Length: 180
Image (cartoon, rainbow, N blue to C red; front, side):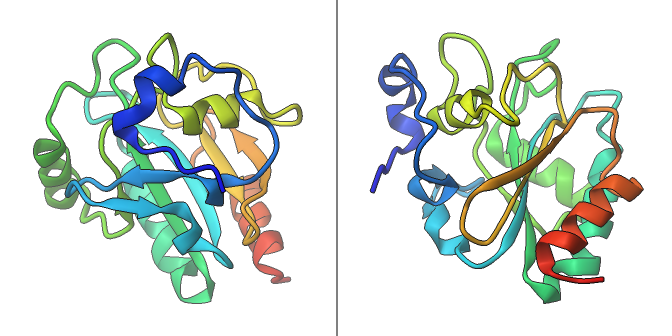
């Protein structure tokens, strides 16, 4: 199993991204500083999102929370990865980001420690996501979303402008959950 922590990202990010394996092969750091294996999410449908607190798309936190609350009891969750790669729109510390998200958007889905989603210091999780043939390619902005099935395989990618409550996202989540 490939296990990579955020602390190791600078040296590991330089290696060629792997397109084998799954999301479950990564270990990340939560917003509270604890390591969490993404294998803990086996069997759950995930929406992985790079986020920012000072972006024109920041109100998507509200849509993300509504989507999470609608489907969380059916095996769906959201993993948010704050990133400061675009216009310095996530300058805060993990503590400040958590406070912002809970105070302004009542976020209850899982927040992770700030990472880089592009460039020389790209976290290996995002090297993996952007290296996938079907859904890969550079992250262009905040709030890019990846839908992942219960086996850790990426099913779809939605760009920044696609709101989490957009019909195409909701339909894809329902399909992944096996709902009509």
